[in-house]
Length: 414
Ligand code: GLV
Ligand code: MN
Ligand code: MN
Ligand code: MN
Image 1: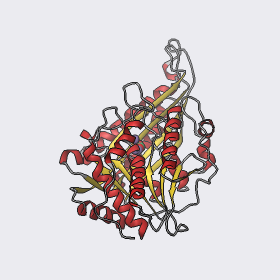
Image 2: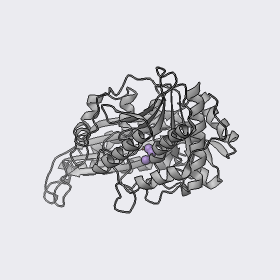
Image 3: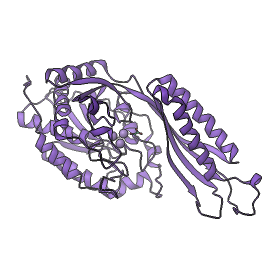
Image 4: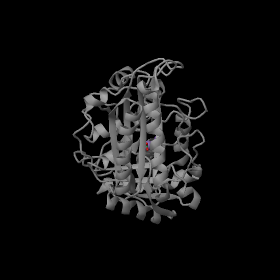
């Protein structure tokens, strides 16, 4: 079945869906706060599932809540081409981060329906659970389960700051499915995402061809100390867990500045302590931090420094330190044929394009471990993201989505 080079997605239909999604889970600053497995996440999932069914897709939910909408292929026993991203958002998230990749995939499938084009291989559009890691650690938890990197039972035990447990929350919002989360090897995976950086917007380039990913290391660290009165208790006897976490996070920032000249980034992302009150030393704290670099060796040495810092911060504050979670991703993980296909389609469709690395975390990184994978970036204004001001102009959405359409069809017809 030949596919017309003139085929284009229906931009106004896609924009209408993005608008509708942007009304679900509105947060404090007017952006989205659709944290994984919250009521807002459930509402968005229900809407998405309805849209998938309207598009004629067979919907299935796996054990960790990943949603798959399957469009049959001419040779339906062949492994499917997966295409998607995430519908959960940060606590002060934008309306495009992740969402564009899921709803863009749905629009691609609707376009194929309009054109009556049935691909050789089946296509499955997917919403991955808890990409952000904003509610449950680590990020990309459920794509990690799909790729066999995390055991499902381990994922079920992940706990949020509000005490909620991942497995129970899946059940509560009715998205703990029965399909095994692992053991399936797709033919390929494609993900459309906003750049989340300023390069494409600054250079006025329409399509980002993602060549590789910054190497990143993340840590969730717990410190245990002892409560005591902040007045009479001697300085030399104090075991303040809040202070241990604070020392670690300041140290991580120092690592960031040390590597900043070569483009390294380090982030003190989260600190919680108990009882976290005036007049009493905290006996428990948790800190989350991450380090990233385009040069894997430099990222690894940043991570080694963090390990030393965890030790030192605990010792200085008289506390016991324990690494609860550790995650790492990135490198030259994407498939050269798919990268070439994306580049070629961007050119053939007449769009300006450039190669660039990805700096944020994406579900695609886990998929890259089990099947040929690639990503397409659209610009986003000033690179602003994880912020309610995140914005992608309509005319900046169409090029990336059209490249996705054509790259997907070529792969699925292969
Ligand atoms: C997750 O998306 C991250 O980049 O931390
Ligand atoms: Mn994202
Ligand atoms: Mn994000
Ligand atoms: Mn992300």
